[in-house]
Image (cartoon, rainbow, N blue to C red; front, top):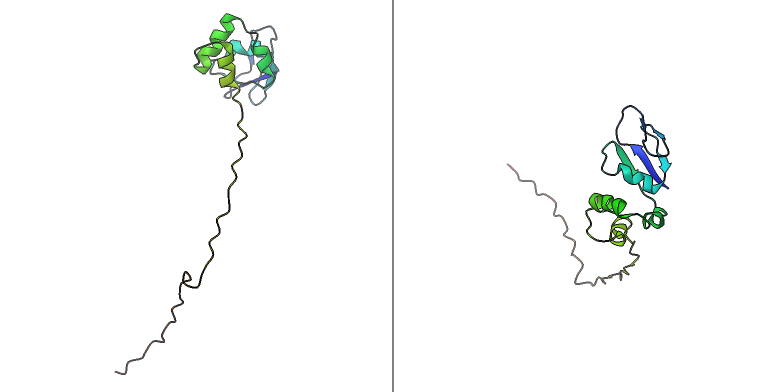
Length: 122
């Protein structure tokens, strides 16, 4: 289920879709993903889609797909839109080889002994 919440403080808003849920600032409400599509682009709301919504959104009609294309700036079918909404996580692990430098006697910096200050007679 997708979540919807108010993006800024203000009066509570009653959704005009079939759920007629009351949205209050600071609280997120779970609604149907297709119902959340109605509020895409409305700056009063912050909408968060879950990974489970991908299966439901795949069954969108052409009008709903057009809303998604416009919101996510994607040209193409619903699969391209869903790839942008839910990017696949790459789990490539890079193996770093430890670089060890052996210090030789020549590479060590010689210690400079401080000479005591000479007092001048005046």
